[in-house]
Image 1 (cartoon, one colour):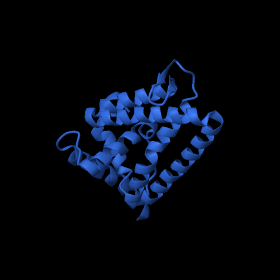
Image 2 (image 1 turned 45 degrees about the vertical axis):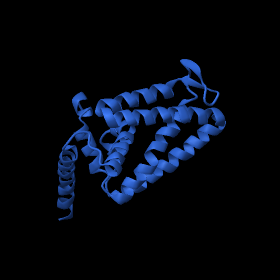
Image 3 (image 1 turned 135 degrees about the vertical axis):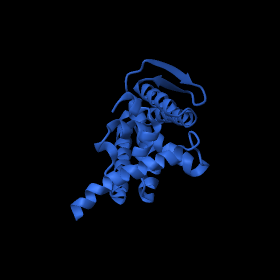
Image 4 (image 1 turned 135 degrees about the horizontal axis):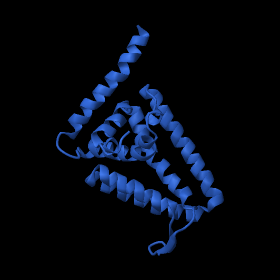
Length: 196
């Protein structure tokens, strides 16, 4: 996948959409994808610190560490995909980093990794169950970046579309739907040949 394909919001969102049409799968992703990101940031709190500062409202220290670096990379990538929705997703990423850091500092490492492991297992199991209802495998088999980086943004973007009728630009939804229909058709044709 080329660099331009990676930043092609229509193409990437269509790939996501073609794998998430079932309402149960969509709902499970809406509930479970961001907790996976959040819990990963909880664990990344315990990575080496580059710089530390006090976060006044809570009297706690926040560490600029790999968790901060991860939230920053995700945020910049989301903004590069779509400035409006990406900026909101970037804000959510940084709030997740702050919340994850505060939670991790309260739990301590010995409890935090157990909470993170339980959260990751629970949420990942839910996502796999969602794809059973979808009757189509997760795109992890096609693209790791799509699953581990983009999926949280696409869940956020789809929620904005569903609840606020948001479109990055006029005609975006129609163009994406055409691409989704084409991908589903490409997926179904080989399966129909196997059946007949």
